[in-house]
Image (cartoon, rainbow, N blue to C red; front, side):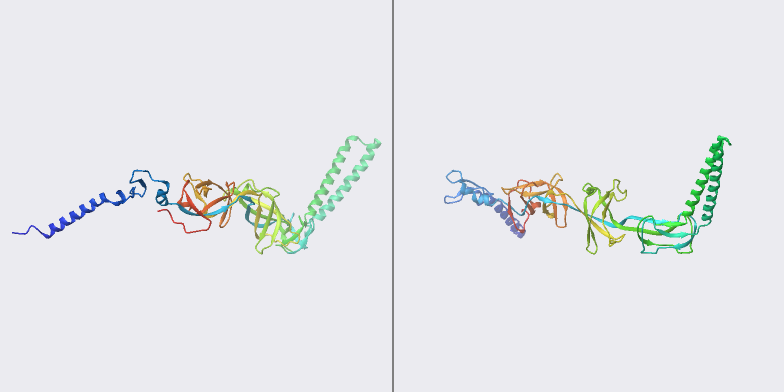
Length: 388
């Protein structure tokens, strides 16, 4: 007859007895029993409930429970509002404020060229001369006609004054003289077109023609640039345009480290449709023509001072409502959220408005706490662990 004590049955009974013993052991846990020999009654979470004699615990007896309350350690930095002048930096290129071209006003062949690249010219100075193409002859013909008409007028006027000629001839004689004068003026104007003059004073930048070359009316003879004053031309964003005004001081910085002071002379009213930026120009003195046309520079505009606070960029947080701000540690070491707005943006720090008095900004650990939490502020950057 087979034995009833099969190994599998023995093992099953042993496991059942062990499980029952482990479950029963919770009933007799020390956490739920009175402390022997005059101890206090303590709950499972460590909070003292009462003494064995039934009296409530005194204040000192709760120290152990209070010590177990977790206090987040955070790193703070003192922040004090102060006047701050924001600097707006724009990428620019230089451009001559007064640049123009000398063009031929009539057709002809260049017979005289008085300038070359780099030449300095004055306004209305003769740059080149063209062949007259019969213009001088037309002037002489107009002069002779005017003399004839004037002589006819004088002779007939004398007869009219003596009563030997009808007075109704006088208007026709006056009209003939006036027509001759107009013809002479036209001939002189056409003759003057053979002379090409500089429209502005400055330095000749290019001369694309040469003596003996035939040109038409409107052909470019010379390009002239007046280097003084010089403009710095750039563009400003929609956000920063409101900080710029006409006459506002500006400093231009060049790639060689040189700086030149000037003032804003133009702020555009219409934005570029592609970039949504507004054109800006600043005028600067350039008496020695040391600043060439077309070089890159930076325009630095310093705004009026405003009260702002410098804080580390890493201290910025968003509230549950999506508001930008920082978390502070108040005088009671409680966390408070403070909404701010950015005034100026730097590489490692930002200047913000919204902090009205000296305070302690939480710069490390601000993501581990919320409003009203009790924290342990430390003034030095320490290792901050997230709450367990």
